[in-house]
Length: 451
Image 1: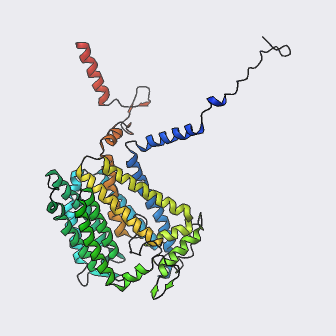
Image 2 (image 1 turned 120 degrees about the vertical axis):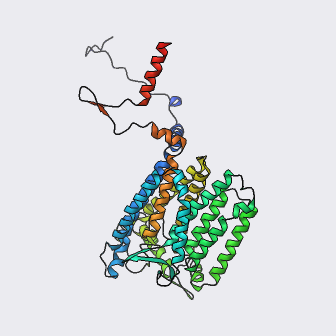
């Protein structure tokens, strides 16, 4: 039937879908959550989180080091990019270490455990030799490498304890010795106390706390009984209380928790309070890169221990939450790698590295927020300091190697189309090379025809 005026058939309009047949909004939300959960559970999720998260933290840290250190460098009659250039050089070397560690097999990582431990103990003992060790901010835990380059051996002690402790516990688990408490503690705890003693000789309480957290993380992953865990924790807590009580400097830092005035009685809380001022003045999106006011001599250690405060002032709440999200993703990926592996060494090493980075980030950010005492530890991968950056990036390379070594991740990587190795067809076009899979199919087809 046609329209009498136009001669064309009438246009039939689609009827509106009844309300009962419309897709509810909660179904769309449920589908989004399901697809997000599937993407989150993919085999290479941990690999991408570790690689991408660590690189983003490092790059953002380089930007903030350049912004936060310019005034300090000019006050010392140095070029404005002095600290940035040193940090960039350390990041380049650390990137090489990360790539090397990510390509090394697990057996080679285990073989390096004892040499790294021996080298760390030797260097940490060398710090206490007069004329070799250097004191910085009251802590003697540095060795001069000539010129303006220095090294802090205690930072490499963290990596040494992770690798050596993971290898030790894994070998004892293979021999089924962890059920006995003496094999659980010896020689792991004595060696850890040796490293702690060498660190405390230099007065570095912050690094000692990180090392203690790594020790407890290894014991927890090894399945230490609750009473044994509590006993070791009580001993460490008692030693920590004695060390704090006998040091006026540490007591002053403890008194600055939650301080809102630079002068709180007899305690000078200048650094803690100005860190809060920097965070408070940043607002939602900050004052912009390079526009910090506190870094102009008001906030000590703006490019090292308190770089998170400058980040909050220049990038605002959005910037600080982004940094927290990156560390949370990195921590989740490390826990996932440790939980999904069947290799005991990989489980303990991944758990130790995750404990190390997470505990250090919590202590640093907690001190900037005024929730914890100022421990003097840098923010991993973010603060200025090559001695802290190099072993941390090597540890990130460990996590990447472990994430690649998962069976599902290996299968996913093997299914990828190779980027190189394409052959040219007769028409001049490039096509994918037929690999062993195609040859296997051809051989199977020939054998079936012969039958």
